[in-house]
Image (cartoon, rainbow, N blue to C red; front, side, top):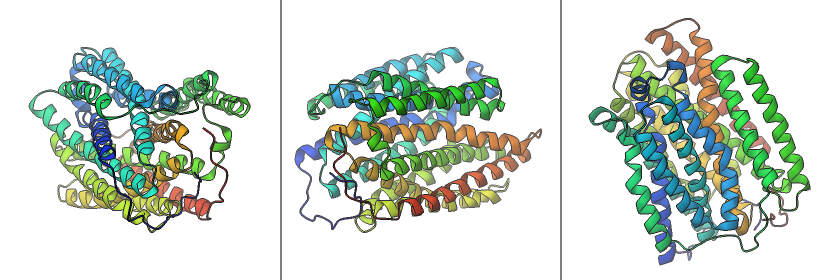
Length: 478
């Protein structure tokens, strides 16, 4: 397999087999659940904090602990899945998700809830790359793989949308605890059904797990994400500077180890490839930017306009529907346009349609504008996500798909983990010592502006970096 991700003529004869269709349905259902699981708690955070006694400044850790663990461990779980079996890792992750959901649903203190969110992050780190690797290895024909990845994007967006609305409904009518409890029967069903319909899937040429590399990348990312979050929350204090310095040392050591290890977790030759490097860099902006936009939209609807969590979930429906549409039309566009070109263009579009948020006013009339702009923003966001995923998984062979999807998922999770803290720091600086809806609205304007122009700039730079047609190298090592 080569790294040339330029579009090929559509293969009209390519059709899914009955087994492929069954695998697709089961894996997409799992991705739907994971996306819903991420978003279902977002609109309930104020209620969770009030009931369990979180300090206002600590509330973000409910989201951050999840993203921190998922980002730090995804690549390792993805590579372990290559070696011991992706289905095995997938089902183990579902079992852990069920346990985490029981702990979270019965939590009676902030500490116990954060333990549950940490376990949920570990489960996500196991489930998501394993499901994606089983998907990409089940569909090796390029047009079918792009279609499958597009449908995966649709289901994840649908899950996010349903989760946002369901979170508001559950919080208003029952309790935020049901955001955890609804995972339990679904996880049990997945544990039973997946082994029945999805064949075991692992690398043919098994190698030793690169334990030093796994330890270095995991601890390095933990330290880096914690440092960014701490700096955003408290400024560049001693803890933040020390964490960032430790992260830099550990990640540098990871690079050296990988360049000298025969059974590297991620061969340096792969990390040096422009498609892999710039594609995964783009994911930080795609997911970090969109997550921050969602956070500030919910803040605007609830804190500035004074609406309920359910209304906030309904406003976010525009993003979910836009991403569903983007995932539906994306494969057709990528049959005619190179993913390399589409990635840069889509990032610029994603940022451009955040800009109306700069002028949001404290009146309900702006809700229609917000929903419309974010609908288009989400179409571009999904096109960028799909382009990034096609680039990242097309550049390596079948034995290394767990590594490729692990890297891709890890980049997503890192973006999610640092997007809100970074933009929250911008928001806090803009608000200054002010308080109340007017001050918050001013901070939201500035944060969305920074978010938008960062995406536009990143998209333009990535388009310049990737505009040349790639050379055709030897297949990537597994």
